[in-house]
Length: 420
Ligand code: DSN
Image (tube, rainbow, N blue to C red; front, side, top):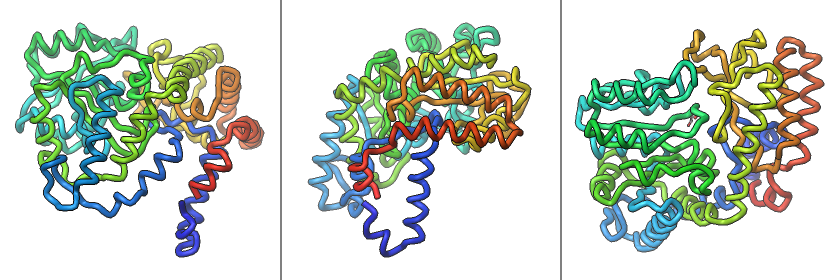
């Protein structure tokens, strides 16, 4: 794939090669990442790169669109089949832009939106003060119950009754448990709000029917394609049939310009692949691996936020080890285990330091690691936590981690020839 670049720009080629080596030799556990099939990379750089296109099949603003029309129609058919939804729009470039498209569809300036707090597992694009959407809409947030560390549905209902939002959002980036979509649907109906689920993190698990789908309950369901779904750097949005035309208008021209036909081709391939047994068996294993990691870490004295996980995410409170999330993230990085520091609910520390880390099990599961290896990773993690400042011990642990992951190649030799 990079044969020409290797010759025309060796310096850049070297950087890409270095990243390949980094991913190959590290245990990648960032919850929003995955290891994509080679076809995703092939299609993400395919000939459709040359084509600029706006509008929808049969209603384009540029000529020469009939082949791209075939692509978009096929991708939409496959997406609808995969998720059993009424309508899908695969033009969004990411999960965030899919969210903005829903805002463009149903909200007017200053309308009220209720979403989960960012520091308790929500997402930036759900109205964080740091996100520019907060300048246009009036966001308020619901919380996690302090005891269970799961969504406080009674509190959500009370807040919805008081705040009277036009839109309620469920989903986020650091919530490891199942969400009661039916309950939130009822709350939305009670207060006359639209209901949107951002399933970016868990859309692969939904596609494989490993966890319940929000599609029957939500008016709008948004997703990125890079997380458990294991696809290109892109997104998509689905809705009930009565919102189909409005949503399409909310995507284009409401919030986006021309589409990225290359990642659209990769999404088309992914939606077929995700219906196959290979994808589904990986998805089934992900929560098994996540639960294994959670219970092993708990046995080592870490506190697992919410007491466990139902998805690919394990949110770990590291305070019992007398370290911060940043200490642990840095030390694990030194060893070659990549996680991210993450605030835990009601965290006394800010987002740059934190009391926790978020660990994702997608990439490791895709590489073939199962319970036995996950237990070894938990053991390495525990020893890292107890030696965050001991470089000698960390170097030994790094060797152990690299030896473990070297048995699970990132890509086969045949694939590597394609990639590089
Ligand atoms: N929200 C970021 C994450 O979950 O890591 C990226 O999507």
